[in-house]
Length: 378
Image (cartoon, rainbow, N blue to C red; front, side, top):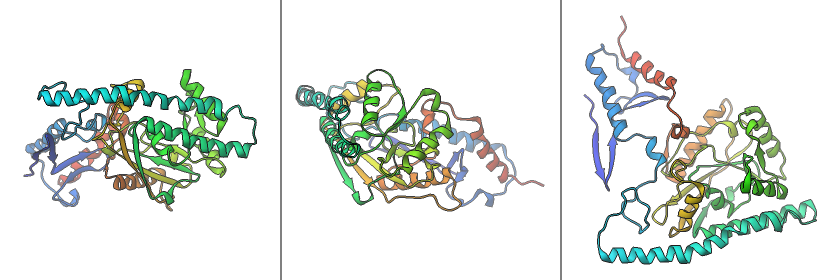
């Protein structure tokens, strides 16, 4: 018989599983190196193992908890918790009230001023200056660094960069994704070309202004699903060594900075050097995670600007290239493992789009196949 244990640590339920079921790896039994070593007759009691694994997943699974803010072991005097208001003591209430005044009436006004600097940069500083292309590019990079550093100050950001010798000069830079402010944090130390879907409104004005200043890649809605077109546009960009490195978040969605989920293979099919970057936030001073299913962009930025600080570490990993005989998916998984190990994050095989979509029926086939191998066939 196999058993599972539930531990209570800092108020969090953590299940130590002896049997785990995965769509990619099938059935894993901790005490057995390979299920091929097990051959047994079918017993009706076998279903209890699958039922137990299902109950464990209901209590705590590896996916859905990555899409909600990580609970802190102690309160950091911010009002955003999952438990609502709980009166503890008058002293603590007074301290929280003083902190509220500091965050909303001292830090927040300065943050608003800082965020306006990016608009000044896009519309005035670079786009309409009649200067040579080379000087405009150099001036653009200088002003980009300056403005993103002002934006970082607006977020009360404290960013520590490690191994700067591995910083991307061209090619593709990939990183784990927690929040839209990841771009601000990374752009404090290096200039990047952005890639994304063309937008309307104010965001569209900013996109067009950025495109006039330097080379960015914006796709129309009808082009986003054209994989060949996207790959060709990426390849054309990276082949020009004078253009900035492209910054891509291959997870395709924001994860709560406890793990790294499946990387989309598109950026790994280009055939260029990949520069991995690991980002790890310290949520004791403020939670950088954007839960897009519960918060709009404005509310998220408001939470960031009224936090105590945004503290994060950024590690530049050595550049990586596709190995001989390695396909794009294997290359993406290898890069993901390196990022997770460096940032102290959990490496998960699951697709981050499970935040919005249901699991595929085909994912049930692998565990079923593994179980069938365990049965003796006469």
